[in-house]
Image 1 (spheres, rainbow, N blue to C red):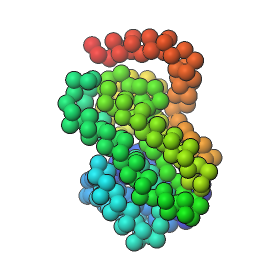
Image 2 (image 1 turned 90 degrees about the vertical axis):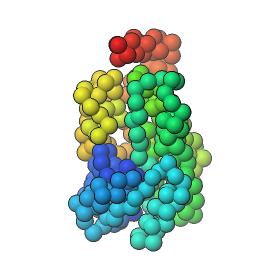
Image 3 (image 1 turned 45 degrees about the vertical axis):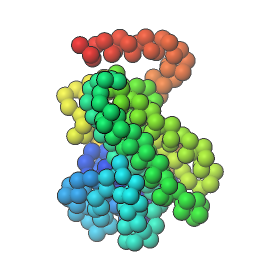
Length: 256
C-alpha cells in the first residue's frame, strides 16, 4: 500500500516502535496520523513533533470502548481509517505459570483482544471501501518463543494467530494484513542487552519503521526487521523437538 494521503491510527504511538512508525508515516506523506496511547501527554508530544497532520488520543487498548472511541475520533477528524497499526503492548515480568492472574489477563487483553476489538471497529468499513491495511505488532516471541516470560510468549502467539486468521478471512476482500515480529527493539521495555531477544542485536524504532513501510509496499504478511527470525522459524518447523531442545538450553542460561 502507498501510504501517501492515507489516514493511519498507531496505538502505543507515544514511544518506541509506535513513535517510529508514526513519524515514518508522516515522512511518507500520510494525510492524517492519530497517535493513540494510554499516556496522553507523551502522545501529544509526538503529535506536536509531527505537525498539523497528527492528533493525539488517549486510548487504553485493554478496553473495547476506548478503541471504539479512538476510531470515532479519527473518523470525525479525518473521515476514515485507511491503516490501523495495532501496536500497543506490555512486557510484564519474568516468570511462568506462577505469575498472578491479573498479569495474564492484562496480557490477554492487550496482546490478544485489543486486535480483535480493533478489527471489529475498522475492518467492516475497509471491506465496504474495498481497501485498508491492518498491521498487528506481535513479536518474534509469537513465532518462536521467549524463554524469560510465559505470558508474553503465549499472548504474542495469540497475536500472530489472529493476524494470520484475519489475513485468511479478509485478504481477498481488500484488507491487507501484516504481522510485525521483531526481536529486541530499543524501547522503554528493553533494558541491558535485551536478554534472549537481544541475541541478534537491538534495533532502533526507526529501523523497524523502515521495514514496516517496505513490507506494506510489498503487502506481504510477515514483517521481520531481524532477518534471522525467518531461519529460526524454518528450523522450528523442520525439527520441532531439536528446536525445543535448543530453547531448553537457552532457558537454563537465562533463568539462573
